[in-house]
Length: 606
Image (cartoon, rainbow, N blue to C red; front, side, top):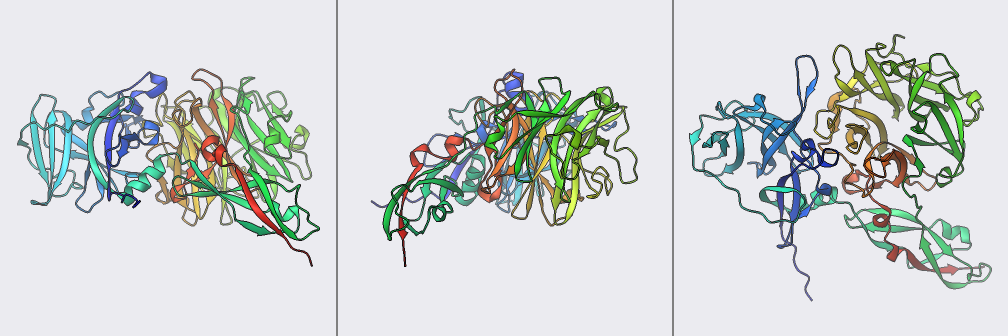
């Protein structure tokens, strides 16, 4: 049978969604551009868990605060150079008319439908609000035709030679009403817009990045020469996934029938190993962090059970052993006069061969919350409170306080070590004179005194997308994952309820990390309440690599919308383009039907 030839193009559908209950899918999430795909006439399949991929950026008020925006009626089209464009009606966060966008439409560009650049508002030379819009490139006139309607029911079109010149849309002409082709798709809440044909190469990458891969094969060699069971232990299976990526897997081999003292060929069966971590692994523990120190693993987290008044640590020989390990108290609000509460987001970091804990604490009220650092004494036991130094507040390079007490708080400080340099990244929130929301900063850190910055702080990101300012304006909890010459800096956004989510900044490891232009911010979050069934408001994650070389995502989420936060662990898969996949569940990571493998073992003796 001759295999069916794949089509050169795949249809991609652009749509928005109807808002749901505020904690489930609020207007700031629903009023964004979503994508779905189909090929060969099959039904459309939603991408990215039926979540938005393109959001309008917030604008800035005169006092520095952000004004959240949303978008409606996006229209996806091909640019003259073959890349993609999107025009949309910008609205206020709740979908109401945006006075700043009167007579204008928002314009974005994208090379791959994964990363978008917001160019700005195209002025259509009208005094009325735009209610709907579409755009196409006209080859015959070599110009873009923008068709639109306004709030008064009028229909117009503008011819534009250069969409990037936002003020040169020309005088609008009266036109006939335009309609969009009806699209049928069984996608929850869908409000369809338009469909375009996308080249297969682009579409395959789009689908690969916005669909959770699943294990489709397990490969092991047909045979191996070995002289001991230890030789066989080093052999790993290769798990193959639906997006073409792979991952090594350890195998538990049954070698009972092998005569290692006798030459021969033996058939050996094995089971691909998979650690099982039921969620949550630690109830009432948030902002978790796991690190390895002197051959043992340590777990530390915010303690929600006592209102964030204590920090305790767990110790075990393995990551899985941490689940049942007892906790040892290492810091509370009674030991030091300047530590009075809100012990948040502790992280373990090894700097210059020394172990430190970075955490936030307050000298009294919430508005005095600041980053602190504790150091383990030489030869000390991490599980012994007396072996940790008194927490000291993080300061600027001139020795002054990082933030002005009572006006600006700091929290969630992490450490990034790359190319011999040491950096700190953290979240700050100004409350006085106005609440600016939480923004993430980066600075060089003095590795000899890691409570002291070695450069001026630089702003990395602020909560300007709808998923980041839902219920509150927050970017916080940065943590770096460095792989193959790239830095993936995940961070958490929105309120710490069921709308909490994980965003992503990326940079080349060799770039100037203090230059904001070195970082690329993703338009959509990597992890949301829609990513893994039964896990709501996932966020504030960290990473640890075990003895097998497997990287694990350590995070918190809620087992129900109203349930308390708990910590979880899930393997980080590196998917298409090498980006981290944080929502690869155990059943997708390893298909149980493929877990049993066999191999011929050839034993040779002199």
